Image (cartoon, rainbow, N blue to C red):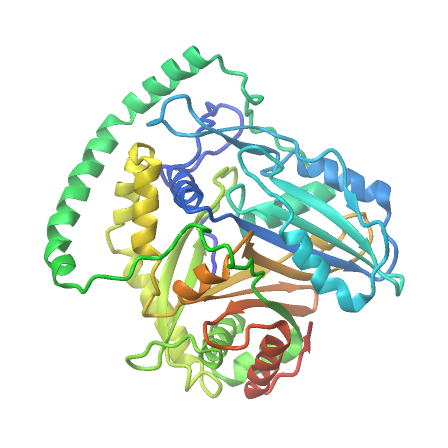
Length: 469
């Protein structure tokens, strides 16, 4: 299973809300680490969802939904501590004052272009807006709605809960303070005390870091030097790229029948499809032709206020076998999850050092890490089954046609030098399986038309024929 809920697990960064719980408005250490690293190199990840109505929307209902979004995990933004070594805090931010409605209708054929345009409108998890909602009337009488939000505010499963809450009118008060409500001196004293309280964990993290450095020093010295990646936008001729995205729609009955015939289930079929499509795109390991799947495992529990409540594991898959037999894929995923469940979690120790890493060091560290991964991994996220309510933004039925993770102002040079990317997301709603793929592979034709052709060919290899947009 690519994504699963671990409801019984509570990490040090979990921040449950509710009666009897003292508010800690600090960002989870893992959230701050990801944001600090990406901010240092100028990367800004967003999540985009697109809904399609076969009729005009009820704007009163849609404005209620828009208002309610500000009373969940999207109703916040990041505020830095006055101390450079303290953790950031969450503060209240209800979001934009209104919906962006396109001035003119556009043909249905331009829906993907409009979605790309909306994905690049400014999103800032610190200064705001952290999200925005747009509406496009289409000339055939249908209507498109898109929500674009910062990935540093919430992850995919957290967003599904947030959207459902907004539709149902469920408000969640996390007790975050207003922006800039803490006097600077008082904030500095308070944050210094909280940082001092973390001293035992920080000391253990320093010991763990020293041990890891000693253990890896020999391997680092023996490794050939890697070519540094240009992280800035210094090339005036470089261009911004919106990574091409296509979405497949397959009836649930056909999908489950295919999975059963191949000795797997719906979840392993998602992994198998990701592996085969990754092979077709060119994301294979040079040594043996295997495909490395990165599988996010959700750790979000009730009341969890982390932005990204997940861990990521890697599974190696032989793409040559997946169209005829999924049993090896299923066994490999189970084996990997069982192994990692009992493995020491180095990250949970080292993450305590996050507030003490200066921005320059994050940039240097990111520069060393942002080199082509020899495994050419494929990110495969199975979001599971969504309740139908997530398609009723205005109170009437629509279709969730796309959800994707993409970056704003992504430079072609960066994509080329880091070896490209492929992200596959799958979700099940009503009687349909939806699979969204966005991919960029250096040296190939990186267009939506080319990706659509590859997706259709790969589906055909599994004996499936779905609608592809």
